[in-house]
Length: 428
Image (cartoon, rainbow, N blue to C red; front, side, top):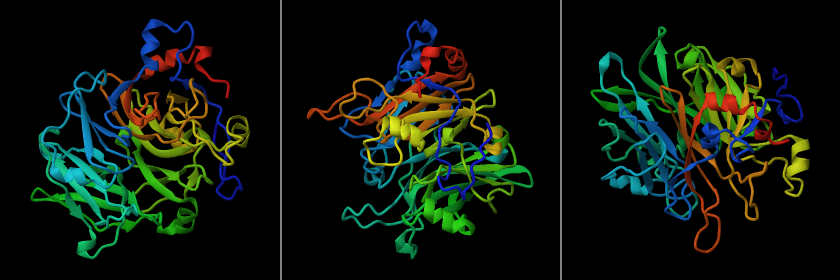
């Protein structure tokens, strides 16, 4: 279905979705043996009472490197490596840079591919927000590079910090990093996005000069839409390139932190120099901290923290909360870039795993919202390995629910098969 919602509507897109909701958090009766793995997840790290906000990168060896902080959005960085395509996580970065122990933000990690056959680099970035915890932030963002597929990393290098006269309290830097084109061809430049505590969204462009990182001074790229940006609290923006990642159009998918708007879709056909007027995303895609990856068959797999704004569903599942939203927890949207372009609902919504509230003993529609910020990799054969953090049932010594990192393995061909099972859908 096409999304007809307009920004001037009073409910700003609040509503339900009609595409199939596939519940991968509870195995249906009579599930075929070959599909049972879809309902399992693997512990990446449960070594602390609270671990959050992972990101992942696929190494050329086929291993998966995942990095995350030792706390909610900040804390010493930790790492895990899977040598078996997400079945287990038994490795870690040895001799981690000492500066990573003082990380102030959620890490993001990206692969940089270069023209002319130059070797790839891996880039890890952490912002420096003001947590009001008594520690004076440096501002700006920290970058660390690896030139040997994640075995060793440079110490953090600060860009646009307060000691240089700047005042960027960067949050989720970099929420996305997109390789740019010039004259229709990819070049060795990358556009990174982040926001500050006033919900001003910035872009900065990475290049290299004699092997050294260069970032352009951050500039507000949604200044034309500042009133909406401020009212909706636009932040944590994902950027998707058309044409399986090779096309000439960019699509932004936003988080709207006030919860009074659905996520917004914004397009550019000039490599991010200008952006279209934001429009509301379908409710099937509404949420926070979207991470998008193309599958070999051309479909998009986008996982995120669900935000449900349908008044009917709130009345049914969260009427006692006193809020005008609730979360289904860790979910994914499956569709095409054309669905994004034309405001269509897509193909599926997947509930990936349940994040528990105290008192819940079984998966349910309403889930704990402290999840998302996913690290996802896709193998050439179509295997998706996606990781997140949340409360998945383990408990701390004091009896409270532990927050930790897990991953999930998915082949979409198996989800397609599962979609035929009536028992795989909740009646929502």
